[in-house]
Image 1 (tube, rainbow, N blue to C red):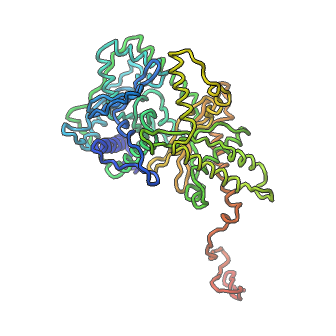
Image 2 (cartoon, rainbow, N blue to C red):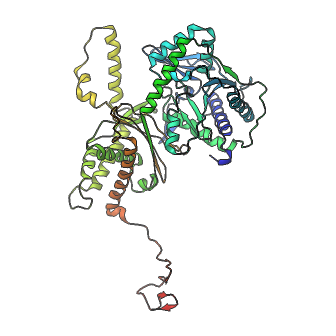
Length: 551
């Protein structure tokens, strides 16, 4: 965050140290309870922020959390596992090699910041002085098809006992740190590095802290373990603590106990499979288009002063941008947190409503018109509808999680019994309404400069946005079409988002109540004119002067 503190080792050490402090506070129940508008929220996701991993399965993955005390397992859960174990180590990825070192001492206390600095500095030097190019990047398998990774993992474990021990070290690590060679500067480049990188230095089954060569840093979350509200709290604490406690003159001495490299035994067949996974992932990266928009004409302050919901305002801008691009509308997903319920996760807000459609269609007409209702009236109606939908979704009154649950139950039943699906689950309208061409999410954080994710369908967009007082940040992702058609690109949608936000602002100004500006001083200067508007009443002789000449 501060230039002279922005070396790779300094940044990685301070952020990681802050994360482990948060972990220990969590273990002692010292983390304050989350609230939303006075309502306490479920905190059950927080233990899965650390020492948690996704385990690939042939048909279904499992989520495994290592804990110092057993949390038990929900007897009705098929996917959530806990193992009684007290991890005190982290794993560091650097140049596709894995290292580990302890960050908590035998008394359960966090080790000092210089300990983190010495170990990370050692790892950087070790990977430069002893480069190993014989093995392909194993982490790429975690980005492959989950069944492919599951089968490869079984082969890896069966080949040598060392591999199972190495996997367990990675799986049980409190956190993974990725030290990258890249040094992105432009926000588009930073977004691409944090979303996927070059495919060689990641382990996507776990939460990761990514720190680039120039100190640019970000977090990459495995979404199965927790939702945005939980991960953001950790990210905010990491940032705030690192600003205060980072050390620009870090300790470069050799650690008393050097980090241990995690070794895997691979045969030619496994090396070939890993290389294929890496090449497959590189193809996915090449198909992904990521663009950012740093909109700075106004932000949440202006929207609130206009008596509108900032989130709903941006959602309507997204609808308008898509309408400008395609001349039609699509199923739109926005995430709503249901953490006011026990073990609550999310519900869907369907941002494309009858009211938003009516408003967008009205924008093709002149803004100043005698027609009724006005564009401003339709905008207010669309925003109010979105706010009501969001409120209902947070209260568990949405429809999509219910329908999704029915579909999952049906799949289980069909595997055991010969049963036909209900007609409404097979209806084309139901399928189209769940094909999320616009998948959107709002992340509110003062510590982050960008937030994003990939599209959920091949012909859609992923739109992550952050609304701050004076700015709105967007990260837009999409897939290049097979024909190489870039007309529906992320960059184009960013341009249309910029236009749409300004269009909405002009509609706000078209309303007489919002077009009134605060009184401003009439004092001004001009190269040849001086003025004196201090008198009341009519302008008198001597009020204007040209140079030294009064009139």
